[in-house]
Length: 268
Figure (cartoon, rainbow, N blue to C red):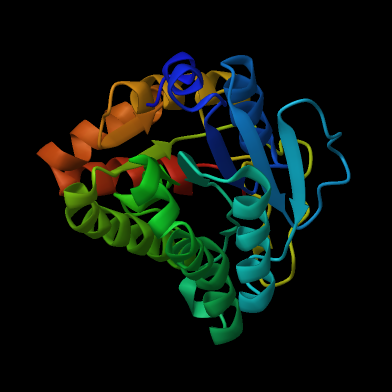
């Protein structure tokens, strides 16, 4: 990860991080940690009213699924800050329920937020990150590299996100740009806020069937450590690390363990 001190000496200004979904629990924790390290942070979210602009922190209201609004917002960020050194694709939603009850509109909505909006945003910041030799950081999930019962749309969107950014990594290496992926397990970002639409769409981090929950601050610290070390894939949390290794060694064993764990829980 770019060193703020080195950037200040070289450019006379602090490096800039852009965080989508930055008003949520994990986004706010990442923003706070980066600000403490001397970064300037631009937060993009549908509702930033709970945040207060501060030194080094700028806020942008945008529905990422609206192409024109996203284009204008990304242009504003670059005009305001003059550069981008790190773009974190953190915005996302979850969807809980069996595939038999999943309608096409809901399936597409999950992909619009979790996949298409992130890739469109990456396109808007592609040249800016090439100019600085910066980093794309996609926030995936354990469901991005494993199956997850009753989350077909969510798991599919995160698998797509990982596949796209892993492929982008090969394209951007020639420009000195890093592409990294963080895959948290269970982060307590919306515990106590289990509101779920009839379609099954819910806030990320609100499901009650998780285990070994991490605080957003602990997850952010682990993500930034992996980022600084240049790790292409960053499983975040003990559950994520265990899932990563078990799934690599024996996908069938992981599937059985996952099914037993999830099906043995009350409705999430």
